[in-house]
Each structure stands twice: as structure tokens, then as C-alpha cells.
Length: 171
Image 1 (cartoon, rainbow, N blue to C red):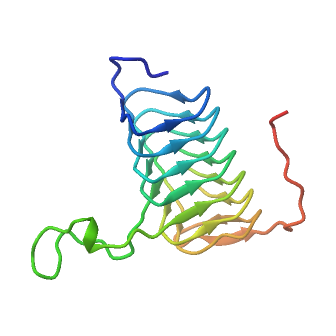
Image 2 (cartoon, rainbow, N blue to C red):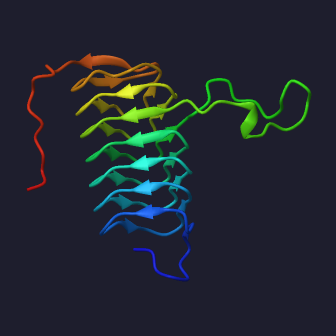
């Protein structure tokens, strides 16, 4: 867990819930982290990102502005989120882009979803409740609740009915 003088950078504008565990070499600024969430090493969470309660974010993950994780979401190692469909270093006049030159496109990961290691999620999508994203997948479209997707681009491998009850491990 992060202690004063540690190797993590947690900006003063970060809103931390109760019992949040943050391991070394993390960079958090302007984000919200819910109760009982665990954040592994080498994770960056940018301003405007919202992380729910009882989430687990594994090492080497990048969660950018505009990403919302609802409660009980699992993020594997090295998962990358994006927030711009057409990223550029410079504007049309050749000057470096600023925040005024692009639009942040949000991404929503719903309760109980799990995202496998090294997956990449393009912006503007919703991952449904209890969906499972296979390791290494590139997710370009919405994923229905309970679906299992894998591949590049990610495709549905197995679908579960939405009526399937949510099985929580929290008592």
C-alpha cells in the first residue's frame, strides 16, 4: 500500500474511497477511486476517470480520461483504454494540440465485467455487466451483458442471457 515518501504519485485532487490499496509506481491524478479497490504497480489513472468499489486493476494498465468502471470490475495486466478516435500530435496549423483541439470520447465498463491482460479498448463503447474480454483482444464495439468476446477485432464467442443473475462474491 502507498505510504508517504513512496514511489507513487497521488495528486491531491484524487478522491479515494475507504480501504483502497495502491501499490508502488502508480500515477493517479484528478480521478475517483471507490471503496475497497486494489490498484497494482505501474498503473496510471488520469483526471476524470471514475473507478467503482471493489475493483481490481492489475499492473501496467492505463486508464485515461473519460473511462468509467462500475463496481466489481476486473482489469488484467497491461490493459489500455483510449479516449480519442483520431489522435494527432499537431493541429491543422502545425502547432502542438492542446485540450481545446480534441474531444474526449467516454467509455463505460459495467458492473462485474472482466477484461483480460493486454486487451485494448477503443473509446466510445460500453462493456456490459458480467461480460468477459479475452486476453489480447482489441475491442472496437459495444459488448452485450454476459458475453464472452475475444480476438482482433473482438467478436462474440459465447453469449449468455441477460436474465442470468449477477453472482457477487461480496457478502
